[in-house]
Length: 271
Ligand code: NAP
Image 1 (cartoon, rainbow, N blue to C red):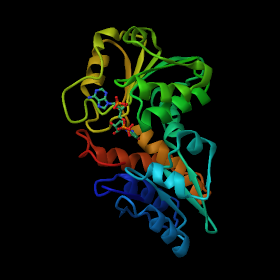
Image 2: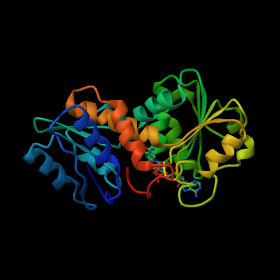
Image 3: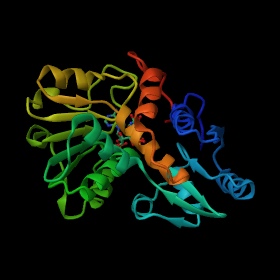
Image 4: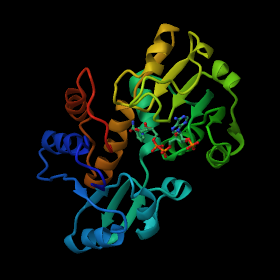
């Protein structure tokens, strides 16, 4: 894994639990790579024959520019969180969106097909979620964001199903996703929670704390809720399976992650 910072990352723990459960003599380690050093880091991967990389902040866009090939998901987002080394030819993928949808199925037994969704935020995570919801057949995808210009860029990823959302749309959505950091290091909520009601599902991509003020408010109003732990797990699982070509031991990787985040969550940091 490359990023800066990577010190508090949970990724080594998730991936190594998978190697251990499958009896693979592999190791996953985190390297601090400073801004500007991405080309040298990728040359290192080629020279050393490292099988793959996870990529985290601030390098997702730079890696997309320097790998040899991109998957459709990574090309649409201009962002790579996973590199697969195929005999020196580096393929860049982005598993965040697929991880979100897989997490939704796992945690809430929910398929986005035909749903009306609102994504709050328009950054890297929001864009991955918007594109993945569109791929999974969501009927409507609204984007609500502080900066309207950025919201437009995210909406484009949803094609005909995308639109700029208003706060009123929050009350009409089947699924509301918070993809802003609001609630991570403060007691704030990203929008007025009185707009929420029973019958809706609310996912907060934040995983520290495990229950954000938004999730607590949503629970009080009878919504089904999920935090960002499942997305973190399944974006990692999608990477793990590409590198190894082996079916991931989901239960063991999930157990290792849940044990590490505990009841109170971990210190915030790059995933
Ligand atoms: P990002 O690219 O920096 O985007 C942040 C978004 O939040 C932007 O749209 C920004 O609006 C909005 N925002 C920031 N502060 C705000 C505020 N005070 N009020 C309203 N809107 C605000 O960040 P990111 O990488 O997308 O990450 C977003 C969140 O998702 C973080 O909490 C991160 O931890 C989480 N995440 C979780 C996972 C997972 O696996 N669970 C994976 C990735 C990210 P503007 O466009 O107006 O600036």
